[in-house]
Image 1 (tube, rainbow, N blue to C red):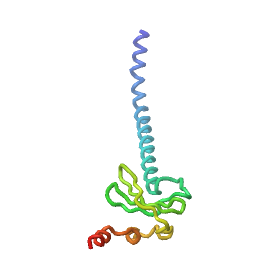
Image 2 (image 1 turned 135 degrees about the vertical axis):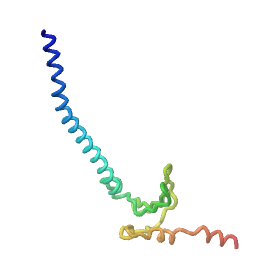
Image 3 (image 1 turned 90 degrees about the horizontal axis):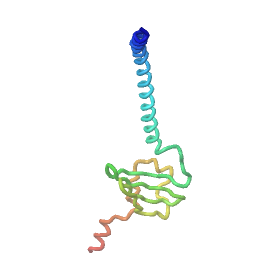
Image 4 (image 1 turned 90 degrees about the vertical axis):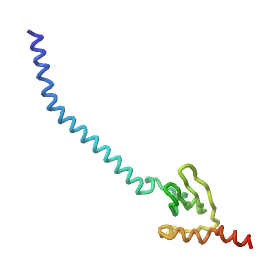
Length: 133
């Protein structure tokens, strides 16, 4: 008899747990969705702000130009010296070191970085044409 009462009590208990369980399950999924949404929002903010909140006074990206899907030209100011870097998915190469800064902080936000860079870098075509004649 005691076994039957225990079995009956156990049988009625999961019905109450299921009703409460659905509410708990919804609460867990809602919390999980909030955490995932927070991760995506923070990732978007980090990407939008340029990589984070830690800024260096001695090293900063002055300008950048996309050459392809994963290739970029980046002008970096390192302690007053500007370096032109070629960045790909697999490597970073130093292309040129400028003796004098070619882009100031005021000009860094202007969209004509490529034209400014073309003024300072010698053209290979002109060199090849001069060498051939």
